[in-house]
Image 1 (cartoon, protein in one colour):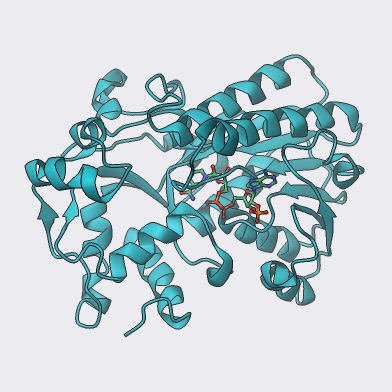
Image 2: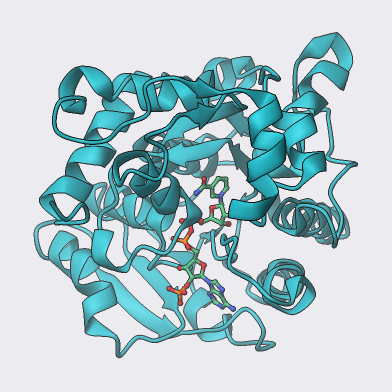
Length: 353
Ligand SMILES: NC(=O)c1ccc[n+]([C@@H]2O[C@H](COP(=O)([O-])OP(=O)(O)OC[C@H]3O[C@@H](n4cnc5c(N)ncnc54)[C@H](OP(=O)(O)O)[C@@H]3O)[C@@H](O)[C@H]2O)c1
């Protein structure tokens, strides 16, 4: 389906880390953006988007919307050809996973996609899913056919009690496909990024879990070492590009694993050492699994015994050939991604000396 580029597009969760770069790309391409945010009066949270819009050919307009309020994306969606649904909570700070993660992810996706059914101008919906909808733990890679994650694999191991964020992304993507398959006017494409790293556009207000990990690499939290846990990493700028191509490539179809590098947390820290190793307490090596097993559960609620057993010293591997072949994606090198992200935190005064 050829997508009309003269019409505006809706970006849900436009204040987010990933969405910021997507909005930038769209505005620079001259596309008008309807930015759905929870609080359009919070000028500080929108300053980076307004600054981009000032110097770009596209215009930005804000709409007040909440995932949990039915119909609240209708006004923002009117007249749009594409809906980019990025909004979803990504945090490890929660008390009630059903209310804080699952409900906004799943009911929010239903809310946005049900509205797409009511708005005639919508041709394509691009949902920001995640590799979390494909796997929970690094060990799931070894258990996948051929020892590698592909778009055919679905997460079957997350639950409300274990890795509820991954569970929220799995249920939300399933809900999206269920709604899409009941109609034929618009088509659905999902972008499934692995762990996103790289420079935030609004470092002071970024609450994404990605920022917490980048911060912990440099603030001394991991100076004694980092558990060698397999993970996939992709640059936030590549994730934005992938969304753009998923929207405007007529033949784009299905899910797209969006991952630049099959790596681990140790390598993510080590690539920063060349440039920043002298000045910041970056990790130098890995912590043995037996030690993580003992101290992990005491220091971080994520590091349960099950999590350590299934992630530490397990490789991570996903096949990114579909997005390379069908959308022509190339990926920014890991070292550049990590350095550019780290530099923004330094410039922003995140690491007090
Ligand atoms: N970062 C990663 O490593 C990664 C990897 C794979 C997939 N993803 C996906 O990428 C998307 C963006 O994540 P991110 O890393 O950019 O996180 P983020 O910066 O925290 O962005 C999340 C966005 O969701 C919005 N949101 C949360 N709850 C909402 C609600 N009830 N109603 C309306 N908006 C709500 C937030 O709006 P407010 O500003 O109002 O809070 C924020 O704009 C998510 O779908 C996430 O699952 C992220």
